[in-house]
Length: 283
Image: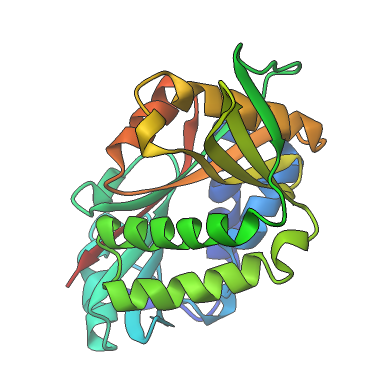
């Protein structure tokens, strides 16, 4: 059936949708408290979504304002012919881009470019730092220079992913850093590190302990360009695991932007699985 119709009683769809989302997180290895916390994030705003069916499957869609632009979102898709209907529905409401959040593979959205991924792995129970590498807290005096470098790198990542224009990326960066670090260097739960080798600072780390149940989020584990190609990338991952356990968590999570093939390859080779993937396409 090609015809779709909007449903008013969404109870059956919602129960099915939430169970499928939970199953995806469980299949990715998430413990139940983490799977439940991720579900809470996945269903934010669900009462504003529009749900339709063709009698054999479901489509859930919405349009939000992101960085001044209308963005369509396909929140759920199990109806065989539902994608075309969803894209048309979003376009009719002014969206010029459609985005999806995926678990368990691209499926019907394989032609949507990857804009970002959340990667996760369980940290070693007793991680040790690589020989020749030491870690110390970043000092408050070092923080402003570190902050400026992080902002510049973040803006560049967003632009490279093709998600936003440079101006939009800078505006997003300002909002995101203000949200994540409202007290700057002294923001509770956040830890900043300097990585040293042979007496030189070769990189930095920024981690948020307790980001989700049992999860430390690695906002950044950066090896400076002049020190790359010497195995320090893998060493930085070991630092992340060490810091995760130091912070009392069990798993380490990262976000990687689309187009950052070097980081994706590093995460592949160090055992970080794709927990969530974000894709979008221009209409």
